[in-house]
Length: 337
Image 1 (spheres, rainbow, N blue to C red):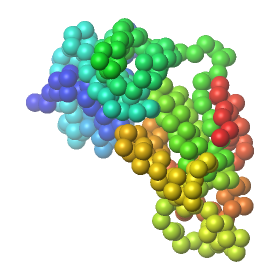
Image 2 (image 1 turned 180 degrees about the vertical axis):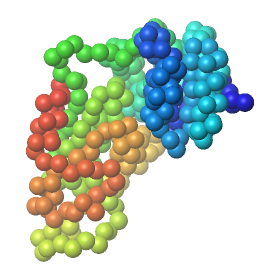
Image 3 (image 1 turned 120 degrees about the vertical axis):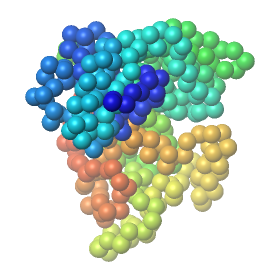
């Protein structure tokens, strides 16, 4: 017998950890798409089994939950871990019209509130409602711009007792007109200063939350942000060894562009950030990686400064000027930091 999951629990799933299989016909999907799902109509299922990823639980959804229950049994016979979304899309629509999903973003600092809203709403069906509470003043403007640029609808926003309260309805993803920019964002990170690195990753995380393709291209001193904090034994020439000793090793050793005071300034600003609940640079970097931000290290700068790939944090790719320019040409914004 197929194992059922309620639509409430279904909406809480992390789409990166599971496969969502929509077995409705394409015409039905166009009217009410289920985000992050793969669509294989039931009529085509036997011919397209190989398109279903193995190794992850499969959650099957149809219009009412009846057809998907049959598909679950078929998948289980093929050794898939499969679950049926009880009530199907009909139940999702009813849930979307009833109690909005609550997002508690109070206490989070930029880009935290917008990132949390984006992460939550991306897995909801079109028409679903969310209710957000946040305490950062900037969220009042940010959420309005985010909704406008992502195709979601800001139904209401108000401030009560210092808490910003916003009601959002999930809309269709905004499609750009033919010939327009892809609205990608490219940041050329030349500086290795802590404050500039923070600005780079705050903007990158914000852009990723808006669904934009983001590339951070690190060159010269900016490469120090990507270095591992621990020493890595690699073979280097004399110049490379000298650079290695003089430059900060990793994000935790970066100094401030102003008022560094021999490193005391950097420690002070990190302490203030922690006290105010602001994400550290290391947390911002990891969050960017988790949200698909592309981190590219300039190969030429690495060669000049004697930095080896083994010394860089995980998730970094190597590239050159063509990689940077190619990203910039597909962006409507390019910053040199």
